[in-house]
Length: 153
Image (cartoon, rainbow, N blue to C red; front, side, top):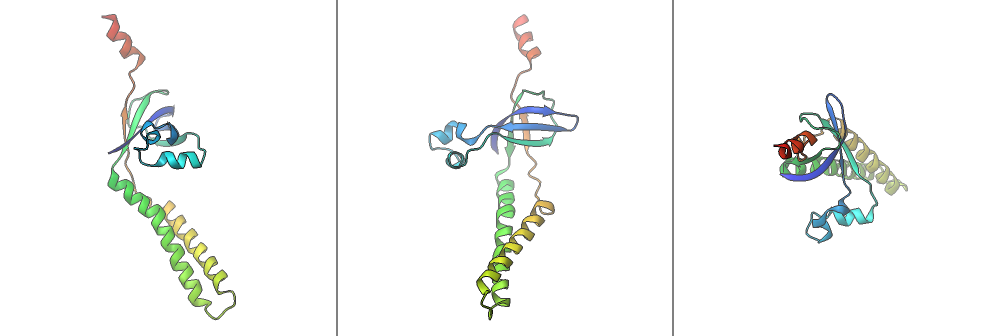
């Protein structure tokens, strides 16, 4: 499992909203031993990332959790979300180039057709081919009542 710590910032009956800190706060990335997200974090100033997940765990706002993903599921999701739109662009560009092969605007038509192919595939991926990553959420915080009961005995 690939784990990432988060904090619960909102909770309702069926959803948890989690806040993940920016990658540049990762100590492994700061030492150059991480996944490389810290490098991109320095290039693109980002604040925290917020994600809403189904509430399958009894946690409160302010509690710390960790969220885990299977590496194979993450690789599949990355392949679908990045690879299929790229394939759509390439197929669209090749089709546009072939259809407008005798035109003076062949390159512009190929670019336009490629962008249309990219957008169509990106829309399909976001709506229909979204794989379920099934993240595992584990509680890391102690409840205030739990810590008080340890010291009261």
